[in-house]
Structures are given as C-alpha cells and as structure tokens.
Length: 580
Image (cartoon, rainbow, N blue to C red; front, side, top):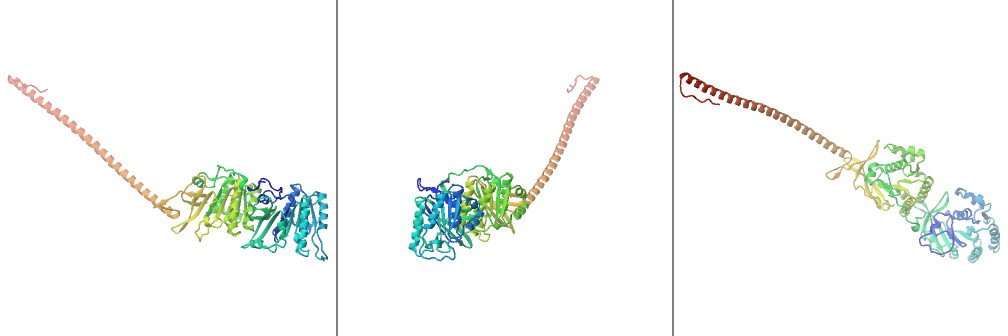
C-alpha cells in the first residue's frame, strides 16, 4: 500500500480495511485499536462497508472479528452478503461471530437500562476467539430506547471506554438524520452528532440522486493524528463489495513511457502520425455523427488483435453484433478475433448507473481479460450519466488508469451537429488530456458531404498538418492525398471532376504533341529527300562540268594538231605548240 503524499513519517498505527481506495485516501486504513464512526443515510452502504472490514481482517490480516447487529438478524445479513464472495458462512465457524442484538418489536421498556450486560457477553467472546475487530451496526436503534440525551451520551461513552480498554479496532455505524437525497442534506445536524467528537475517525457516506442518476460519495470527516484526503470520493458497490474511486496518488512514482509505436489500423494514417500511436497513449477521436469514429476504433481494434494483443471494445451506441456487421462492410473483420477470445466487445446499453459505474466495469473487464488496448465508443455518453463536473473527473481517472496500466486507450467523442462547437469546450473537456487528438468532419461541396480527417495534435511526434479525405469502401479504409485547387481542398465529385478535366486536358495536349511530332518528322524527311536530290544534282553538275572541261581541252589539242599537220604538209616553217 502506497501512502498518500502528505502522510506524516510517524502517526497512529493503522489497519487495512480491504476496501479499494479507502486505504489510499486514509494513508493505510482505519486507526488501530481506536473507534471509527460511519454515518450515512438508508442505502448508503454502511453495513457492507463494515462487513468488508471484518471479512478482510479475518481472511487476510488474521484478525478475528465480531459483528453486533442492532437492526437485522445475523442470518439475513450473511445471506444478503453472499453475492460478494467473502464466504462469511465459512468464517462464522472460527473467525467471525455475529451477535443478534436487535430489540424485539413487542419490547416494552420499564425503567432504565444500560449496555453493561451486552458488553460483558462481548468481553467473554473477545477473549475466547481473540477478536481484534468489532462492528456495532445501527447503534442508533438501541440508543433511541434511552429516555434522554444524557442517557445516550452516558452509554456511548461507556461503549467507547470499553473499546479502548480492550484495544479493539471498532466501527460504529449510525443513520444520518434523515433521508439523504442531495449533498446539502449532509449538513443536517445528526441526532447523535456528539459521537463525531468522541471517536478518532469519522466517515460520512452519501447516497443522492442528481438529474435522475444515482451517485454515491464518501468523505473522511476527521482522522486524529493523521493526514487524509478531505475531499469527497465517489464509491460503488460492485460484485466485490465496497470500492472507493480515487485517482493515482501523486507519490506513486514516474510512469513508464514507451517509444514503441502501434498501428492505427490505417496505413496512411500511421504515416501521417509518424509511425502510429505511442503504446500506452490515450487517443481521442472527435466528430459529428456518421464521420466514421466507430470505423477508426474498429480498425485500431483489428490491428491490435492481429498483433496478438487482447482488446476490449465498449460500445455505447450500438449492440456489439451490429458493430461487427457494420464494420465488415468496410473490410474490418472482427468476428474471427471475437471467436478466438482476443477481442471482447461489450454493449453498454445494458449497463445502468453513473459514469463511475461505467469506469469500474471497464476496469474490471480489462483486468479479467488482460487487455492491452481499450476502445470506448463514444466516451461522451458519460455526460448523460453524470453532471459535467463528475463526468470530467471520471474521464480524468479513466485516462490516469490507462496510463498507469500501460493500456493504449482510444476514445471517440460525439460532437453536436447543430452547435458546431469544438469538443474541447464540451462537458467532458478531455481533449487537453489526450496524447493524440484526431478530428473528423464533413466538407460540403457541390451538394455532397465528404469525410475529412485532420490531426489536431500528437504529443511527442511530428505529424501531418494536412486535411485528408477519409474514404470508406468495400476494400477497406484509406486516406486520399490532399488535392487543392485555387487554395481550396477538393473532395468527392468536385475532386473527381477536376481530376477528370485535368486528365482530359493532359490527353489533348499529349495528342497535339504527338501530331506535331509526326508533322515535324514528315517535314524533316521531306527536307532530307530534297537534300539528297540536291546532292545528286550537284554531283551531276560537277560531273557535267568536268566532262565539259575535258572536251574543250581535247578539242583544242586536236585543232592545234590539225593546224600543225597542215603546215607540215604545206611546208611551212612555223609550228604551233600543242597545248598540254
């Protein structure tokens, strides 16, 4: 047991009660060898509190106990407590002793009486069984038989002195002054209020109804010689008995922080998150109805089960079979994981009570199956089961519990489609506590509603700041790349039309480019043909020119030769030189 942060280094010896949470707020339990007064209205849990204190002492602390019943018979009390698993019937053999001390209905009082006779009998029983704990249940029943306030004080002090003499750790229960229906009723003066000044510890139980919701609170009113939590703490009566709901004490130590990533179940969302959620983180997904909050919770659950991690899925909006059917339409298959036991789905529609009861039920179920991941869809339902202040307190304890247990928690939260107010200003106000906050929204364009996803924050990791279109299809869930036109994000039909227009324009440009290439190729070929033709013509002209030159030279030679021959024949002296 970890003491509260402000507990003194030395103080009164304490005995554990076995009541979850109470030993934490009292720094170890009730004062040893002293008397504790337990006050509450009808149905506030006084008898259950006292029985659990005795059962824990007998079973765990090896401290036999005695229960003195002034209102109900011992057999009825034991029968009523069978559902808590304390095995009171077995403990009655040698560890617990029940005394039926309730006045009979036909009792006629004559003269004064005191508690000496009963205390003598109890003293013999204490010595016989070595009892160390004792409970006087509904002491106000017997005190009401005394004639005046002075007589009542006398007998209470007699009882208190007897308890101190035998160093018994005692609980005395007494009813509040009237029916407690509101917190203000706690301020009423109790008929035996002087006992609160006499005892070393006083605990007040309150059971009230606010906005149609049953709420139970406990407050330690005094504790001599010890520090304690003075604020009201909610409590529940569950299958294991009395349980006080407290937050993780500040002195418990530093939480283990993991750098491991776990998949969201959507590959492209993991990329946007820089690798997925941190293990042990708490994730908040907010959005209007129909924005696929449950779908993201289902995708995360499926991914966790594929990794072999036991997962608890709590649905407040639909039956679990409906959730499984609906998610299968977008490629999320949970049925096989339910059959294997890796996934457990709970429909909270059948759970009644306050947000505190929801939290305790979830913690119990998660512990039973050893869950490493928990999905609550939607957690905003808790605002209907409590007032805003208490619902926020429960949500804080939910997150604190998940972190202390290393559980990766994913909660969805419903936004009011008519108000357009952000979740951060709703009654739960847990967006500031979440490690990762994903916002789902509608984008209305061209008469369509398209789903958009944005990561508002993700502590400790870089993440995308883009708004992506969330697409649900038979093939599964994915995110489209961002597409902007003129500074505006386009989704759905507008995006398809814009992409189609750009695709057609691209195809037209490509065809025009091909036609131009063909024309240029033809012109190039034509020019090459012309060039070859001109080259051939040039060669012909050059050849013709050479032939013409050669013919001219030959002819001139022949003429010179002819002239020389004629001169020779004529006997002329002069000879013309032949050109070479």
